Image (cartoon, rainbow, N blue to C red):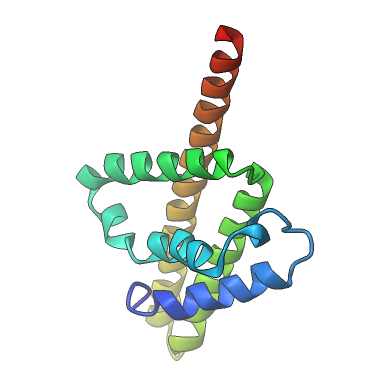
Length: 144
């Protein structure tokens, strides 16, 4: 359901990012680039479900983080945008899922726990990518 509706969720996140005056650097990116950055994560949730694919997902996230570091996007803005994406995803699911009985409430709680783990994984690998990019830049500066 999340992957199928990833574009609607991403659109709502982009509106929040564009409306937030504190997110100045991410707001400097084009709509298409921002959309792809955040939609890519939601549209590949199935990779998180397969443990054998998590290494590729981690590497992909670290590479995106290196690009955002090179773009001059502060890490705190990336982490905040992940927070917005997670909250919008959970809100979207809550609005679609009925809460009529205990089983549905339990399933919703499990989905939220699973999404929290997924986004924690992404944030961790984003931070790793930023750290790697910083070390690479520092090493290059020392060589010169």
